[in-house]
Length: 534
Image (tube, rainbow, N blue to C red; front, side):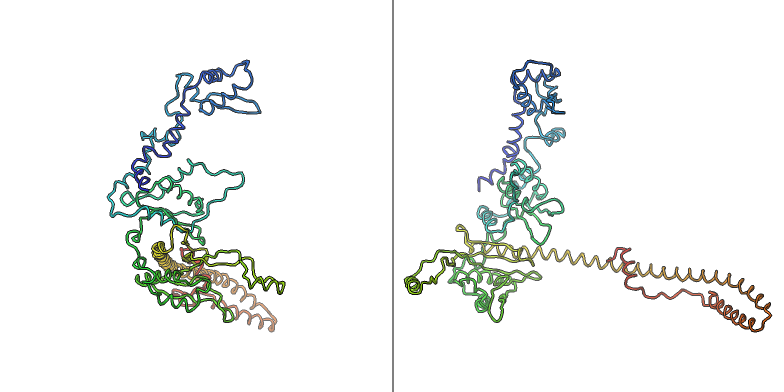
């Protein structure tokens, strides 16, 4: 590990990308053979008729095409070679043009006057991070190996049958692009970026890129890269962080042996509630839970034992483990899962005698034997898939991984607090926008009501003007009726029409600002949406 870290300072001299690019350039600019020069001149002359023996000239032309000197087409099934600009330049000058064989990125850097010897922005930032003063000595080898140990990783992308995985060079380029996206701070070497499915990213592919970053040792000394991926979300974060404080200072309980750490009261309650019914409640299981419970209590976190599920008075175990830890608004649960080994059962003498006597084999072929190995699972989301596991793998034991469990708990709490604060700020801003939109909506509603009242008054005023002419003509007609019965009925209608005219005349009522009624829910909601409300 020390050798890998020490190679950071010289990454610009012997980097993987630089070696590949130099090898490509040397193969493209290698001197041509006499046969290749003959074929190149033949193609430059327009491919005159020649008595070629076999198709060796086509093979040589394909080799020249690989050197980017010849272009071969098969239009309408006819084999037709032609010179490229580089091939024409070679015929005219007897040498390759400047920059022949360079990639587009190298040609761009060459045009800008920048070096093409592997001195990339990533290397510049790494040199700055390596040269920055270090705050304290850290056991980087143990830190990096422990940080990656036991964590649940997203499975790598499945390669379809007949498909090919990306080339190493392509994966290395994507690793360099991810380092650029992280925007590492030159002083601290820390950085963070967000990814999502909507942007075309894939968490399994990002896991491959992060493994490539670790393999190429692209991170500053003492820094590690990790992802925060939740199954229930479509986005995740990738960040470069430093070693947690527990790398240099162990837990206050981790240095105490099992006989020195008595069972925590909450763990005793767990045993009483039989939430370890599916676990052989050994001394080690109690120690692991007690160590986490004691450390959580020292840090001021709230602890409780998880109630077991019961059906008809019988326990059915628990869904989310045995120990619950609550920090502010975040809740976590610790589930201790014991490793079970299936072994072939060896019948006893009593079993054999029973089989001889009854002819019935009363034992099973396989039995489950609990081992002294555990998986410690941390649940941190509503979805059951949102968890992280630490396991005994024969090289590292859970007792040494307890600091990283506490690290995950507190870091996820901080992330949840930040997300909650951002959500509260969003809700406050939305509420403020709703209040502004409601004020504007009420003002608009009042204008709408006044406009409707004004339009109604104009309509009534016009109706009164027309009604006056009609009543004048109607009066002359009624006076001319000779039949007194018909004239009495007509005058009754005339009197009603005159009263109606008085009611319609807007000037017969007081002229003032109309009263604004309260808007309905649908009307107010529609107006609020027009002004940016919800």
